[in-house]
Image 1 (cartoon, rainbow, N blue to C red):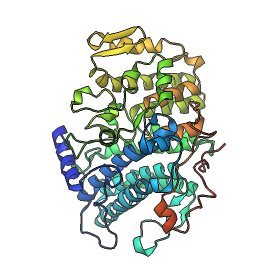
Image 2 (image 1 turned 45 degrees about the vertical axis):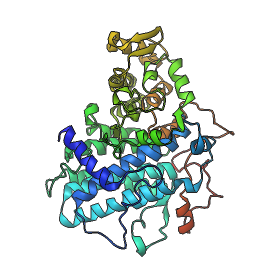
Image 3 (image 1 turned 60 degrees about the vertical axis):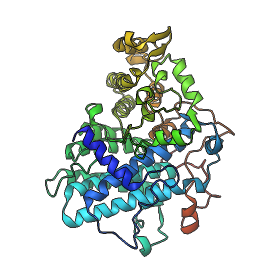
Image 4 (image 1 turned 180 degrees about the vertical axis):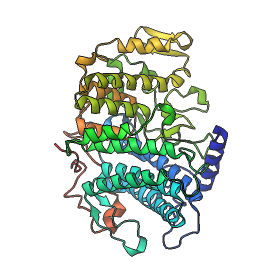
Length: 471
């Protein structure tokens, strides 16, 4: 599918969904389980994908970006969040409306229709999306309703499943999706699949990388996790950035990306001060892009920060993430030479992804002073960066801190960084206030009020660790 077709589809979706802004973003799109509308999988799939991308890179990126110090809250509501004053009612739209009532309920409807009609590709994609979403949610909140959820009036108070059980369910969904996407029955989701254009081979790569990501999270609980993660990647992961699962937003006023809309409407966040300090300490030229101000303009050519563009293609996972995962896995398994190469490849992949945005600038601020972009040799720029021993200590000097620090830099505002920081403690972050950084988000207020099975906020706070977050 051409780029124009891609954006046309998004334009239609965006107009149909009336995407206005923060709290009530998808308010009118929810399917009432008591009054189901007769729809088909090709209608539901793009709605689920757009909503998931918007939520992960909207509220997910902003809330968790505060905790990883990729983002600083500088005004109004986000200045309060900067002080870790995260309240249950702040989660109602994020956890309740968008993820549970929106993405997961609609996706279950998609799964049911696909299963009933033998549409194996749609059924496989639906399972892949559920695995991805539930992994994100349990990492963010811990124990959650799952086995008894999504039943509407049949069960208004589903039990909370332990995180370990949810992880097992995620692995089951991944396995089911892999089987379905490897078959040849039923219609293929082509133009309706806004991520991979209905290509099952690409979805299989998605599943392998997602499985590796999940196993890494469990490393402190399962001594075999590194081997399992490596095996998943060896089944076939991303071969380049072109394999990344991305969903592109549009240029129209009602179809722009989540960060663009947020900054345009609110403008109460900024790039984290500790993040830019780290970039400066390593003479990192990506400070010109990843460290650029939270600002937008009417001229797309002026956007030097990748995620603030109007039509940014939001990633669900990235090629640099996979390379740094591989570097960590191989390092922990004693495969030093391979780990070092994967580490260097991860940095190179991040530089390559930033090159497009370097080119939007007139000059780059480099250690020796500003240089016109037209005079920059980007291969030499990378070589100079790697020539620093603080960046590339060589095969024998490589540490986990090197790997996780570069991953932290490359995955700006990516919610996955919150998992990395909790797993490894890298980079070392000082709390914005008090003596602790939150290790989870609070449950939504509507969940606390309506489901008696919700853990009490008095017993489980934002500083409580999730099951896999072993001290």
